[in-house]
Image 1: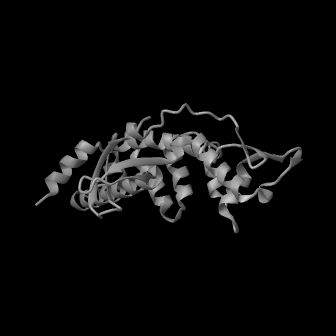
Image 2 (image 1 turned 180 degrees about the horizontal axis):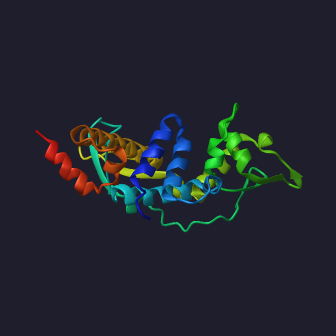
Image 3 (image 1 turned 45 degrees about the horizontal axis):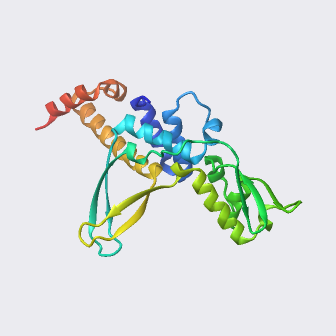
Length: 239
């Protein structure tokens, strides 16, 4: 995957200010998949989306990722260093229906997509999400709706969905060097990549402001420069 054009990346950042997390994920996915219709991207599983976003992150900012986490046992702050390759799932991706049997019910599901996350439920969000992913549910020979499924079946279905799309639920295994406590922490590529895009966009626009004020150049001309040339001119403006 190639890094997107500067103007395209800035445009996504600018439009995303008032977006929800799911909408930002779809916007980032579109940034890395030029020419693909938004509807097609919205129907990808969350695991497929996040796998593509890891590739986009690598193209834009490199493979290395840095972060920190506080130990839940002693409060020590841990510095984290890992790679996008470390986060890639080794499980082959499949679009086959997910079948499970629980509590006398036979349930068939499809994987969760961005389109599902964009839908808003006024009641039980988890049950509503399951209803959108439900292909069929039976108790014996009787068809059953998602609303009629008992809670243990909903729990089993939620676990089956997570297991069938492991890339959608990235967990970091962390060990505390101070007390030895080990725990798992979730890693959300959408929020992480969006924060990086925002930091990059702010830096880029500040550079544009500095060069425009110093030389009178237009924004389009400054953004069209290579990063190396832009850096050179910025160094020339330093006191």
